[in-house]
Image (cartoon, rainbow, N blue to C red):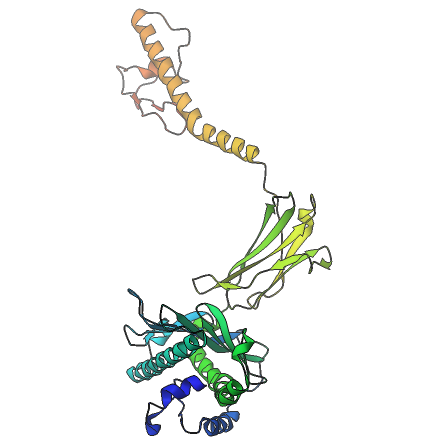
Amino acid sequence: MLLYLQLFRLVPERAAESPWGLPVVADSPASLAKVVMAELANLKLENKPWPGGTHSLHYHYLALSEPGPGLPQFLAIGYVDDQPFIHYNSRVDRAKPQAPWMATMDAQYWETETQKQRAWGKVQQVEMWTVMGYHNQSSGMHSTQRMFGCEIREDGHTSSFWQFGFDGQDHLSLDLETLSWCQPNLQLCGPSWWETEHCYAEYDKAYLEGLCFFSLCRYLELGGQSLTRKEPPTVQVTRHTAQDGGITLKCWARGFYPRDISLSWWLGEEELVLETEYVETRPSGDGTYQTWVVVWAAARMEDRYTCHVQHSSLNRMLTVAWEAPSHPWITTAVLISTIFTITFLPMAGVLLFIKQYSQDRRGRKTGVEGPHSWTSPVGRNALLPSWGGATTLEPLSPIYGKAQVSPPHSHILS
């Protein structure tokens, strides 16, 4: 791009190198692009399935026109399968690992990555000035965002992308098929722009369709099991009532890996495509993914709808239906009854025994038995000291609420 020229003309030709580590000849970028394309043409990946699902390598860059309080002027994060693995910011000025499997890389690797990200920071600043000029702005806080990367799917198909934003809005994208720079504002794209930028479109294409995939394969080898593992989804169906009284069923899938998953709603043998709303699969933040699909359901027919889930971790398709919960008052009644039975009945038995025992003792002192005197199955005198042997009263049983009586060893009760 013209943006690169403004930067690389300041660098001696023998020392010039792109942020991707490829040599840059500032005087003849078109010739360089052709050389790079020719060298990388033989390195293109074979179209064969890759085990373990879909994998991707993305880089996200953010640059500020001026540093803010506590904010770096340039920030770069690399992602493998939406998981950060490398981080760089201009304040620290060092590339650092963000994934455990990257900690094994030697010091030379991190020095090289630091130099690359530092170069990207300079490129991003040049682009900032250029775009600000297009918008007739020369001061103030502004930002540019760059995202690029590649992806290889389980069936072997590959794709790449390159996008550039200004102040949070789409500004420029690259069509890799036609090598065209696409902009929302067509006034910024004229013949002079195309003639100048075409060689850099070829250069970007060379990286995105060549070296990017080799870097991805290298990182997948480093990540090993953590990147090629398979974790099944946890599926749940919930029912919701809309403000207009309509009913929706939402099928949630959480905690699965890899990212590729298929969710669909069915009514009997019919797939409900037009009635279903889909959302993009998102990272959960713990290395897994989550997504959901929702369908409008007919009243009193919710149990006839089924959610079909397909994922590489499952041996067969998973079918889940909505289950109506039991009535809350029944659940509450059962819970209260259980608590009462476990807690209060034994306590009531203990209190009743103490009351009866007290009345019985008072009756003996006065020679009159109470109306509810308690009599031991082995004889009332077993509760009193016996001259012929030791009769002991064991502690009250906390389980049954009854007194346990131990008869004397050498005295026979009459």
